[in-house]
Length: 239
Image (cartoon, rainbow, N blue to C red):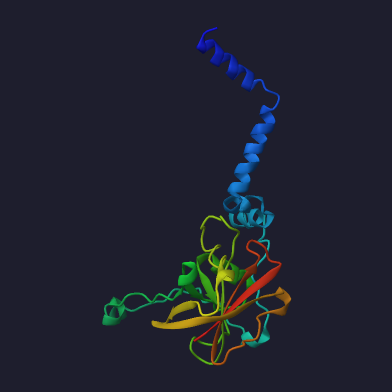
């Protein structure tokens, strides 16, 4: 028997082997285990409900929203200002109009995060949930940055491997922050440097944890674990 015939017979024996399906299944399971961290979001029902709600909001309402319940943080009933600003020709031609637009940003070097800070003008949960798609949200009624009191910033979190769509992933790794890690806030053209003081997991119904540091307490809050809304993670930082 020639070598070519032997090779052909061996290949035929391999493909006809009763163990081939089992071997392929084991190889497939090994690949899933190897890359699970990057694909685990695929089997997360909450994530798929959120995708459907973004694509078809009338048919699939949002499965959950990030709600902060703490009366001490809410003052009055602010409204969303959707009216575009009307400028006169003189104002448009003034030196001030030539300045660069203001950019409010949150940067956390330790977990490689940079995101726009959006100032919410209402505590309405649906409005805030929509704003979170474009960055992190400064919760209305929070203490101004640098002043005594608690400043609250909200952000989404998503499972490992979740594609960086919008800003759904922005706070996915804040659990990795350690005491002393830096949080940089640039707001109203002033940059402030905070240091992480601690973190905790809380129930949504308990609202925002009370500050444990004196002066200005910056609290970063997200749903936890990533992709679910069963708990909240709160990371506190101080100036």
